[in-house]
Length: 174
Length: 287
Image (tube, rainbow over the protein chains, first blue to last red):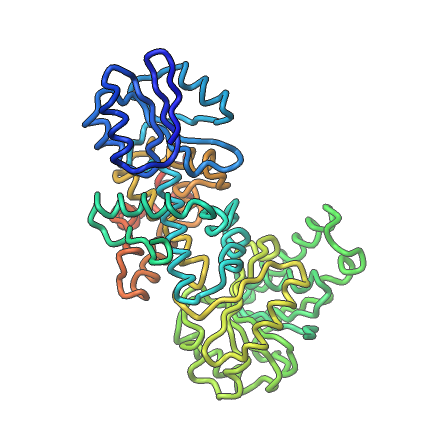
């Protein structure tokens, strides 16, 4: 977890436990905090912490560095800083758990792991099928490479939130 | 592996596309359909494809000249016996398909490979009435629309399929510029299974029938995810009913596993005949 401290503002990046994220928000009630909440439920955080002024989801960013961002209180300095770091923030009004892209791609990745477990095809063939059959820019396993922990954490968060078995992570992700 | 003579059965969109792709390789193709109208449409399609690809210099000069001579548009009673490969691309009806495969098994030479382009039926079920010898060279070859453009061919082996044959076909398609994927005989194969969440999850994010929400989700998935089309515009293009039917089929085949549960919003649209572009109203309105 990395934090950038500016005048009255903290931008929090990276992956950490929910408790650590909350600890930071507790520790700085007088600061406006903008936080990477890719894997956790934004509604819960917004309700609990009035000092949380915006959220973004950068953990699944690829080389394009495009990320979703939601502001409760828009801050141009924060936006400029993200751009300086190479990110291309795209504003959203959604505050669903996992926002839009991380949530969708995590479920696609999870299903690919179930298919792999059942021996439907190899990782390479599953990647190839999704790229050349439905024009996905990457195969599910290419997307998940190095991000398995984020996929697992997000799916477990969705499972706890909804109690819907559809979010049960495949055992290869646990 | 040598594939020099192919029979494609069913001159609809998929059959015509598959037939044209084979003929563009210089392979002799017979395209069979019992409807004169469908055969005429297929002939027009093949001519326009040839002109289109030739204009882009994407066809061998010699093949451009020969391509229509290589394709013969036939009826069932004109089948030859000596095809190297037969691909069925008819209506998704189990009994009709099984009947066709029984007839092919009886008529064709033993060496002929018989394949189905089905997107929904288990290959073993389609081939269950075939002789044990034929079952070894019976498999699924699932092309994607438009067949001349989309590179994927799912090569689907049933428990009876000769694994060497599947691997040889994989290599053959790869050598001819396709991107094949070897796949076990299971519901939805690879793509129609793994892609379900590209639709199901955005439906759960949107939750309600709200065009602004669909627009924003489509926008984010294209901009952030790099997808060429968003899920709602894609469902409208494919047909909301078609997409819903595939979801239901996979869901039922997996014993109504919650990972594939169809969303009520999609079901409601189907009931309201909001089927997408074809009815001028789906998730979006088309005037």
